[in-house]
Image (cartoon, rainbow, N blue to C red; front, side):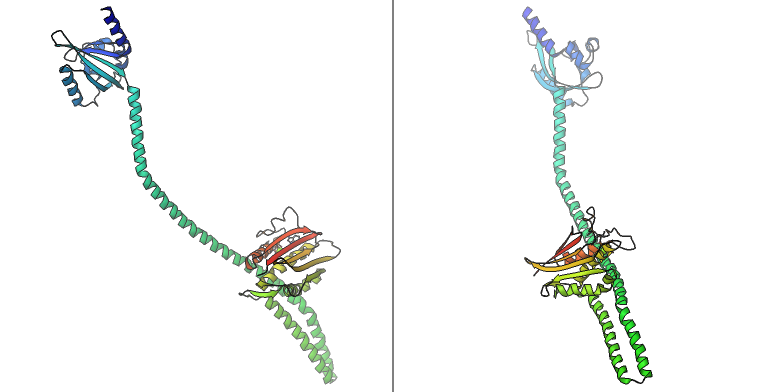
Length: 402
Ligand SMILES: Nc1ncnc2c1ncn2[C@@H]1O[C@H](COP(=O)(O)OP(=O)(O)OP(=O)(O)O)[C@@H](O)[C@H]1O
Ligand SMILES: [Mg+2]
């Protein structure tokens, strides 16, 4: 009997234990039962066991329970119960019918242990699995949707890039237009300068002719007339030179570098001599390249104009620009060197950028060297570099020989 008592104690201390009579009225509830259900002994004893029933549990479960235990069999289940405060707890439950000697049911004993945490975790897990399944199902659609959006974006971007490129082309065109206008202004200045001399010559010739006419010296008049015609020819040649220089040649041609350099210098002759700049040219006549002659002329002209500007306000003893051209392993090197003090090392990396200038807004747009670089790279497939050398700026143009 003592052993049985200890056995009963061991079971009750480690489990949730309750007993009911044959009608389900609670006759016993241990400490653990009170703890988990939140009811005390007085509240439980004498009440129907369905006091802890949870409304979620279907009626069929209870029918099965009662059918089983009334058949005097053991019933096992995991039950969802409700505590006094309304919270839910889960218990693994075993219900045994206790029988008397003649096999009649005396009472029922239920032994349970708490599995709430396990169940909640399992529920959480199931929920996550559901979510995952759902996510998987929608993922494919999402990927499709995103791909479509990306494609749209891509198409949009392509369009934008095209538009921007178009705008840039327009801008470049305008830049060149602007540079051409500036160069034309320069040209008119130069024509005016080159004409000053022959115009005064013409004046003198006309005056002399008037004198010869008064003296009836027809031979002299004839001679003066021929002289005057020559002067006028020279003047129209000047216009012709400038016109060629600024004509737009669409096709690429093979041309001689030396000719190009000579032409530029003859165009600038007036302004160079006014600025007391001496130009040295070192180039063989035979070196030729393929490209747009007028564009290369414009590039050289821009570089020389910069040198001319650099000599202003400098007290150089002798202003010299040296231009050389030579062949060097598949390239023509055109070098333009001045002795005007060079370019400040702090800005030398920026001089080819559009709108970079150190000059007053009315004197420079900062487009000169940008145009030079564009011409050399795009029209001639060449490259241009600059460095300071021998007390001045040193520009080197490399053009591949085809
Ligand atoms: N030979 C040179 N010596 C010293 N500085 C130079 C020389 N060539 C160019 N630079 C510097 O590089 C800058 C940029 O030259 P770039 O020809 O691009 O523009 P700009 O001459 O200022 O203006 P623009 O040519 O449009 O009238 C100049 O402002 C000047 O500071
Ligand atoms: Mg310039």
